[in-house]
Length: 414
Ligand code: 7TS
Image 1 (cartoon, helix red, strand yellow):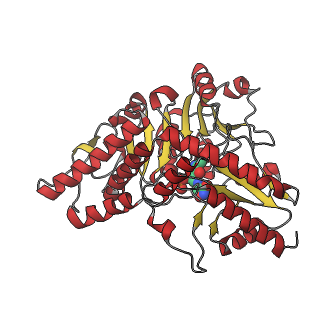
Image 2: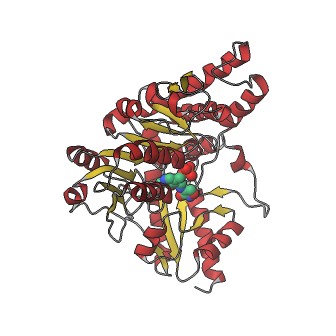
């Protein structure tokens, strides 16, 4: 990384108060677990406090000043998200997280459209959140579950795609794998699925935070993501759906705030997106998510992708000498094909032990199955350690990871 680029990242990192807090062992906090959840910049934290201190009120009902402001800020955040992903504002449904968004589609769209004899096509890389809801839909409907295979590097094998799409009603696939970083060949999947008459849901939990996305260009039918993985708070996420699909879908939850008219025996419902947003929403979190998106737009998503690409290349280069000492790096190992995620194991050290030693150096990585148990079984890995990068990570963070690995190798006599 050039000195100017490194300075820019240091300036970004300075916006994240938690990164200035040393660990209890007096180490610098080296946060390499953004695929699990990202850290939050000061502006996002301030937006949460500002709402509760200045204009806490429920939305879509009060006429008084602070209620009107809460409603305006909440709806303004929806507009920001719509702009960020190139969608119409009516296509942005607030949910709690990616998991809820996928469940919403699997129930609402799935129950209405899937029958015995139909097929649901997933990939072998899916997070449990984009697998379990479809398993349940398959059980309810009698539809068949199919999987696009991946090779030993975690790259998609598309040779049999046309056969897999035969009779398929929906394809659901991760934009970016949270375990191996593999980027989905979206153009191919979307165009071939549409040609076969299937709709496409993209699990964007690891996509929207790291890659520029534009719904018009991607042309997928549903796209789901979580605020907490892209500098925003927990408890708020988005389901994007093409307007005609959202209009045709029945609501998922029923109650206040999603109705048009209610009589004792019968009700009618609002238009999308409101018909999917029953009950009091996560108001402060939605507003703060809007601020997170403002932050990402200022930094620039093309820059985010390029920064993570360079950092991944640097990490692969710095980790290479450890490979002679038993470090195994999984996945495609090509920064063009993956996005900011490196999974690894050190000789026969258990990934949890490795993560614990890294922790003593202030280095936070996740260890385990990363909610992709079927993939781990297929690959024959009991667990992996995973480093994942984001806007605030520097080459110094990768260097700290290497210091931690050196320590682990010493401790385990490797
Ligand atoms: N899909 C993918 C691809 C994910 O990476 C995750 C979370 C989810 C769905 C679920 O997101 P949620 O916000 O609804 O929980 N992934 C991870 C991870 O890799 N480590 O912790 C959570």
